[in-house]
Image (tube, rainbow, N blue to C red; front, side, top):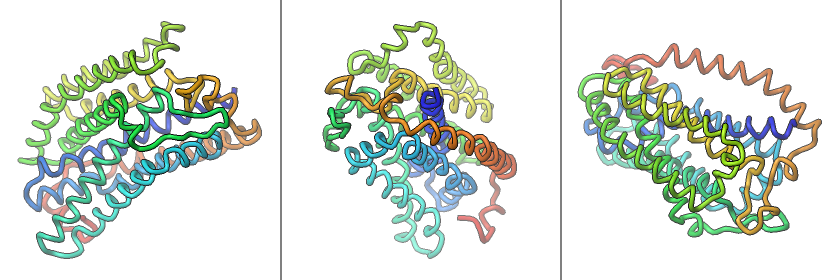
Length: 341
């Protein structure tokens, strides 16, 4: 029972991370396409400024829960998926440094360097996370010994790449809507156009991913065994439709909430589909790492749950305060602060 609870908490942590860090990853990916002047680029960076590092706490939490609650899964992932995970880490480091270093010196060459790092540090994590999770949903070559042996090129299969396209488009739409909330003038207008143009791309990516899911994975097995689970699809489908409605109405906060619901719904569609496996095996389903054979002791899970019940509400309260305090429209005066990027 405790292992199952932590399975869904594990999925929830990933969903919250995608929902929160997704908008600043998406905004960074959009930078070369909608931010052309130095002021626009600085505005875009400061739109994510008070939030991006706090958002990444959820990535650390998801990794920590994997390590503590499901140690064999952590071991298999960080050995078998070593190359993509290192690429993800270095890309996130590049992005973090680009925030801090861009405005330290003047000069177009210096700015172009860190703008490129911001783009790569936003685009690559979006793509790699999508590729990784799509492959997990489809099943990865976990052997009888619990070891995962897979190369980077093996992950770049059609279903994995479709997952990458899905994540990139999800985050870009999410980021464009966030920029409409926090910016004004020409940059907001360009972000609104980007959200409008990218929405059909996202809809196509979701449909394409669902089609390939039926042919490339067993993700629908749990749904076919328990048809009531198909109600889960109401969240991403409803979120996708309402995000377009509210984008058209220029109601940016509801549109962002609907986009967040789409991301969370897509994540849980996959998490519920693979349950009880965290790493389904493509070699033999019996070799997969599941809540039954890969969880920590009941005492460990009980202690973790107690700690989570105490500290997660504190983190949520802090983040609510941060968003309530700083999620206001940026002005020219905001760029003049010493703390601004």
